[in-house]
Image (cartoon, rainbow, N blue to C red; front, side, top):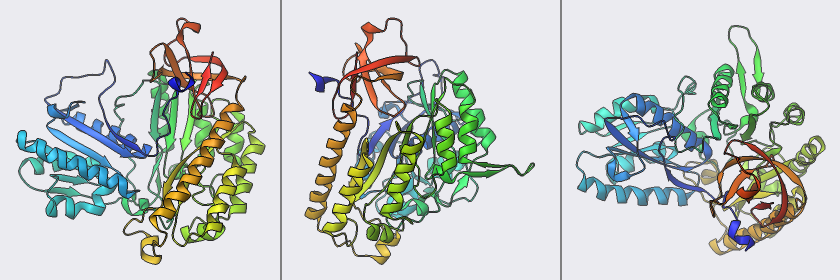
Length: 471
């Protein structure tokens, strides 16, 4: 019976999701667009920026692809599987185009720059290709494509942050929202394609971030997640006053908007998260006690090949530092199995770091070589597929055990839960998360009059590997 209420919230990779506007925000538009997003939270946030731009051009969102005049896929290139999924969807849409003359199909995001020629010319799957920094040019590109031309803009920018565009909150629960604070990445991890598809790092105007968060709170949202490829390296300078705003400064400014507004952030690079950030987190109860701290590998030798710029000992010391400031802080991670030249002792080092870090959950993958990355140029992808699968299976088995043990330690504890909506399994139960980002499901009958966006104190009575069950 316990398994009935288990919530699936930490997917290996978010699959495509179609969007529609919040209830009560529908407007009559002359044309309709359908958008699916894949990959990281940043892509989902970008789709809301795209929706805002399209709204201004007379396009309204629809969940029904058959109704659309424009179909867009916001893509991910982080793994080969994600690209294969997008290609399959594009083939399906090609059949739809034959049934609906005039339908335009476009690719946005990280696949755009990497595969623009193939998608447009060789395979002829799309009408327009738009990179992450070129969304402002969408209206002109749509016009070009509508006139029968192949439309493409994948130019990367050194200053585009879309700070002045108010995102349309698509298919939101009205409680939680993403807020982009920076774009791009400077880290050049050898396995990662992001610096090549999203460009160099640049931070958004702090005042615009604070204004967006304040507006969300005034509209009834009660949690914001600050997004960036590496949020801890956020660095913005006010050109008029010369004031420097660090990530710790920004966190404090957002936390002071209202104590009822929760703040989360993702993702942190271990080399950049500072004591100042930890001090601010520990000082404000509405900054969630949760840090996603990707390790990628527990082997110092592999970390050096990955260009992660830290050792296993340094990483474990950072985990310890987090727990010194916040003993109740939840920690999750990203882990790659089977990176180039990985030996059994390297794999054992990864399992050892997992045991020492006591992750609440992790995102775990086999290494997937991405064309154009430093690893693809420098190293041979020499670990057999079966070895990768076996090592990944061992990582997953260990994490499943750690996740269950973490949840069992919460039995009998009472948490403040932000109610996000109905449980996926039953409308008789609420679903929300605690400060540590754990999903808690509890019966509505025990909390008469409660609504999404409210806080409830819930005592944990049972648990599964993925969910806390309250009464």
